[in-house]
Length: 280
Ligand code: ASP
Image 1 (tube, rainbow, N blue to C red):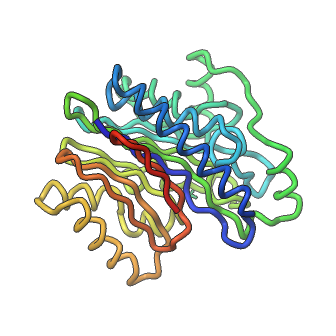
Image 2 (cartoon, protein in one colour):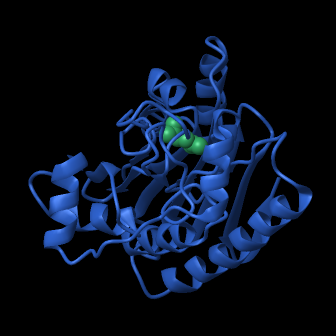
Image 3 (spheres, helix red, strand yellow):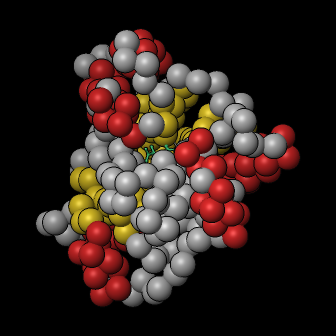
């Protein structure tokens, strides 16, 4: 059993050492909680559990405390993928809910598994997700100062390998901040979140770069074809560099290999695998 989570990149110029430390503390605590949960739950249940905890933590750009789009609205995107069944579920630009990852979890059981905008909101309300305004005072201040042009980091994600050897991945984001309304993030696509029986990957960074690099699906495909997780990530990041892509990933392979890789050294993540490790 293994679990790895991330809290995206920390905006270098805008993040105080205290905020960085707070994010690391939070990641450490949630990684440990997720590992305890994994002992009695599946990988799929665990990635939803961990990502919902991260969404509830306003330090991160997902759920509560997510970035605000150019028109003043928060629109959330989240997805999960079950490596065992290879089913992918997601929501794109969902407004006024607290935990978009839980809406994605519900959707994975349907024939239509990715919903956007109004359709996603109607589905959420029909399934009992109440109105919730995720805008925090801090994000409002950033928005008003238009600082978010510069501070687009902090997406969250989780990959877990359960006791039965199944892998799942989940990712949730408030997007880049100050983007054109309804811009589509990578986080609810197979470029940003992918899992099969061989590996699972959750990405963060500039969504357009992650999509251009087809990053999560590409890394998992390489592992499926025989690469180690590390070799698959490293090769994919060499390719990303060719177009100056900005991204970071966490992943677990069915062999038990656990790995993190990023194009810029300011990503925060934590893993739990007998012992807790918190990085950056
Ligand atoms: N990948 C997210 C997006 O482009 C942002 C992030 O990971 O920080 O919407």
